[in-house]
Image (cartoon, rainbow, N blue to C red):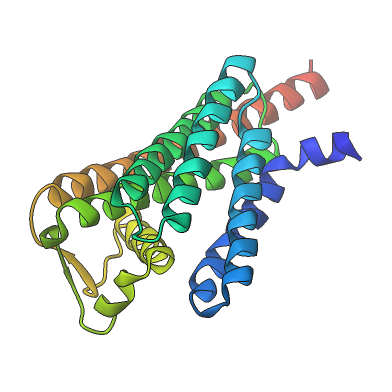
Length: 232
């Protein structure tokens, strides 16, 4: 069973990320006990990223350290009566670092592969989504420090007062920027948002072009080796 889970680790991670993206916006109207349970799901997904993405010992040690800081910052922010902003700042900084580290680990594994599997393709998709989440934390951090960097539509502006929904909204905004789709509900209105957006747009196009080319190259190499073995 464990070997089968390891073979499908990215599929499990993708399912967990979709679950998180579904739960987080809905948890705004939940009672406190249910929101605590929702936070437990977030912790479980972070642990899942550890198990699925980081295989080398030094990677896991660094990832565990980052997750500890991430969880501690979240607890301090949720438990403090005045919602300490410094805890939220630390959360977003560590969250962006942790997710970027996960993307780097996924890309490293993809480029070290000699043969491509279905789970590797799903892993590439997970890396794309994790990159969007990393930038989402960066946008949320910018909004906390320089709220004038964004112009937000009146329909969603009041919702940014809730930290959980704020995180989801900027993750949504990040996906729109990464895919270069873009909507006018959130618009960059000054630095440093401008710099983050063009960097993310370039990264998104580069990721798709390079990773897809690598996957296709591995697939072609596998077909060529198979044909050579059949026709020596």
